[in-house]
Amino acid sequence: MNTKQTHGTIYLLLHSAIVLLISYLIVSYFITSAKVLSFFSVVEESGDIPMSDMYMYINSRKGPAKLDINTTLVNIDSCKDRLEIAEVIEKIDSLRPKAIGLDVLFKNWKEPTEDAALVNVIHKCNKLVVPCILDAEHREDNDKYDTCIRNFFADQENRNISEGFINLDGDGFSSIRTFTPKLFLQEGKSLDTLYCFAAQIVRLCDETAFQKLLQRTGNLETIHFQPLRFYELDRSEIDDNSELITGKIVLIGSFSEDSHRTSINPEMRGLEIHAQIISTIFEEKYINRLDNTWTKLMNILFCYLFTLFCWMAMTKIKKGVEILIKLAQVAILFIAFFAGYYLFNHYNIDIAYTQTIVVMGIVILIVDIYHVGIDLGSKYIFKRKKINQNE
Image 1 (cartoon, rainbow, N blue to C red):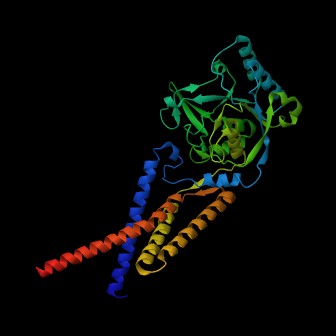
Image 2: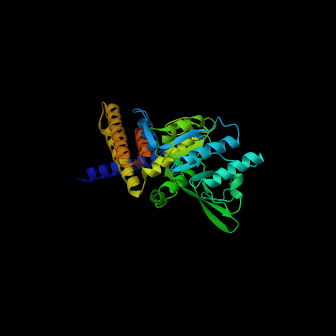
Image 3: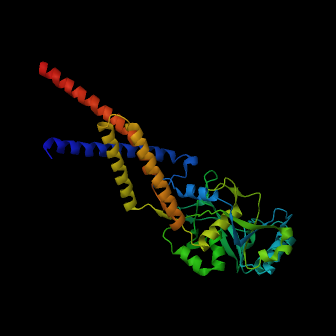
């Protein structure tokens, strides 16, 4: 290789690196700007968009939902007062369920007779989890709170009540994608650990599954939303369907007043979200986000090779270059999507690569602009040199 060829190779590598750097800066700027908007909250701190949302959505549309035979949802919208809710809890408890999750928060005392009956029933249930809410307005940091909103009966002395916080990881606008297994409550000088509603229910049923959850790295898990349906009963149907209660996890709550947007459904009931989290924990379908240093380096390498290809195509090939580059883009997108989809479905792995795809999308434009800029700059320098020589 002669000196001219060596210089040409160096220029090719250097120009491609500059184009890639410009592309990454542009994409990073727009992603960072978009993250301040609530409807772009799906963007993660790393600047990548989780493909798991799309994979779960596709799976949810592939066929009929699978019946989860372990969980039954009981609707109490028809209950007129706390006395009737107490009767529902007592009836379910008498049928020996595996665990009961009561997704109803009773903040204040209301009517002495009804309240006394409710408290009496709840204290008799030894496999019952009741909710609490950690007040986000009094959060000290991401995991520590100093205010907890509890049921009126949960503040009594010597209580033997299992509590789980029902805070869902969302701001009311973004989709519910994750759950936090545990948070901390600062009360005076003591720091209490509180577990989420679903985790507490699992704890009553399977201590091993609960401990495996706690042993995982980090304190944020992606909910593996599956195409599941659950047994559903109204309070009037309990007596005739005892087999759907005995040995099952029973979640009690409203079917009409608590809905949220999720990855697979624009309106999913809160009880269903808790049931999906329970299923994720029991089946150990934890989604492992592959977003480490090696993944980032591989993404940068692929982008650099694609930039080299684009630069060579734009400078060396005269005809059909746009079609060639578009075909390469489509092929890369196709391979990346289906490879990621396969890894997600078979190994619960979600690879971070969407930012890479976006960078590849604008590389062509940057190469074109950069190449035109170099040509104009070269012509200007040549013109100035010629003027100086004539002087």
